[in-house]
Amino acid sequence: MKTKVKICGIKTIEAAQAALDAGADFLGFNFVPPSKRFIKPEIVKKISSRLRDVPDGASLRSNNIKIVGVFQNEKIDVINKIINYLKLDYVQLHGNESPKYIDRIENAGIIKTFSLPSEFDVEKTIEQMKKYKVDYFLLDREKQGKGELLNLNKVCKLTDLFPIILAGGLTGENVSEIVKETEPNAIDVASGVEINGVKDLELIKQFIKNAKNYD
Image 1: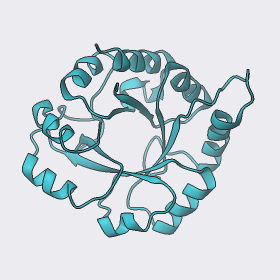
Image 2: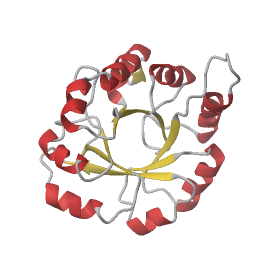
Image 3: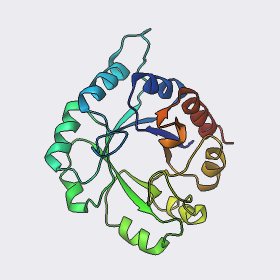
Image 4: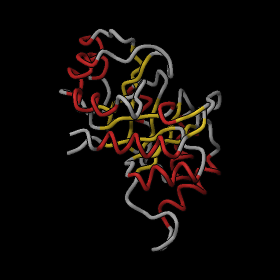
């Protein structure tokens, strides 16, 4: 099975349209207030409803794309409220959320982010990951949008053991080889398909094409 693709930080219907048409499997919406990609749930409601419930022949067609809400150390009640309001498929957690915290999240799959240095300690990371019961682990750089790519040899040791979404420094130019080398369950991109902080529709299409046709 080919690696799935998640386009994160969606803020417009045009970006969602481009990702959908190009074959994205997940759309990520950022509910972390300090983030430059923050979006209000009310706007996501408009986008996601058009993605899922349009009639045949409309501009956006339903194709089983999954909607992901991104949170960081948010109150459980807030997360559960947004899950129910938007019918989120997954919640992506970017903070220091504990396994007990995760157990209180209702009606959505869980993606737990591990933000790692490039030369992370594999054994310690495995030990920490084993504490969580989640659908996916997302591996990202310590500082989002900055720094070296994660050591791909070390990433491979994790993709052999866990369901992994790989993020951090991926672009249309490097994604094909990275997917081929590491074989994650999915890959995640935000800044790699942006120009001056804005989603570029052609970059989205090219990224997904390269990610899904690496062989």
